[in-house]
Image 1 (cartoon, rainbow, N blue to C red):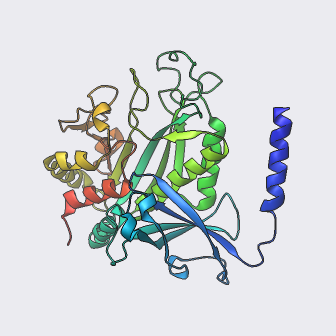
Image 2 (image 1 turned 180 degrees about the horizontal axis):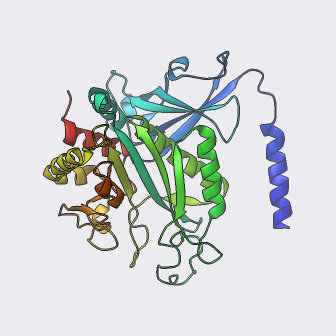
Image 3 (image 1 turned 120 degrees about the horizontal axis):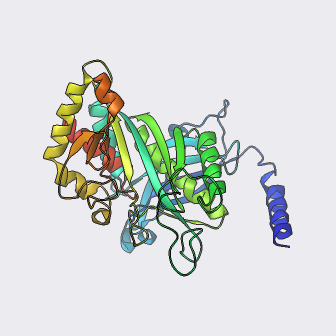
Length: 362
């Protein structure tokens, strides 16, 4: 009976999704609120470009009530949405779009929680170095009763061991959501490069990149939005908290892989080592923007470095910075910053890496 009701619901929904839109497009404007979560609302676009490809400049600036998202006071609540990136909409299909937007105040200044603006300035100022990033987003799937999927109602599952990259019932949960998200990202043009089950049951990871400059933050935020939207349709919740469940489990991170054109060619190890020294000198500044609750994760155990100590090493997953063994052997490549927590803002992560290595901008 439950399956029959689900089929009926799906058939009814598709009946409306297939209706003619009379030459209009639905644009879902997406932004980041004061709490590091995505918000969105829909706008009808009455003029579609001849080639069907929208650009940010084709779209109007919009606004929302910032007092309802803790981004503005009630007596001056208008916050403006300036489109910065456009993606095909995998939920609604052609000609509909997803619009990533920056938040700006009525006086023409970037909103306090608009971390993209400063990041974009850093990326533009240091663009000659051709910075490439890759981010590894870990997350946990919860049911509507706030219990990780597949966990017993009273107690905990067996200790970690069989779950990482696991296959089979009892080892992995919610692969349907993971695969649906993967496909949605590919359709939207997100540079998702892979996914895998993590060491805790109901915990997964996806990777985005390599992306150049500001594109990294844009794509990671859009991938997060799609993850929440897909999970919403399956009746699941997404947690990107670094320690969503107490106990002897690995925390969730947002590891950042980084390289410049100088690091990716012969002799690049010299530039990698110089960059790591600059990161070490600003360890506290990085930790300050690398996510809330990171002290629960960076304990020096479970493949993490201690939060109050900076370390680096070749193939060492217990270090702050890991140099892959293959890169060390070749003498060039990239390094991995393992400090960011899973709830960190990718604009702040990539921005401070650029700032620490190449300098601040006005």
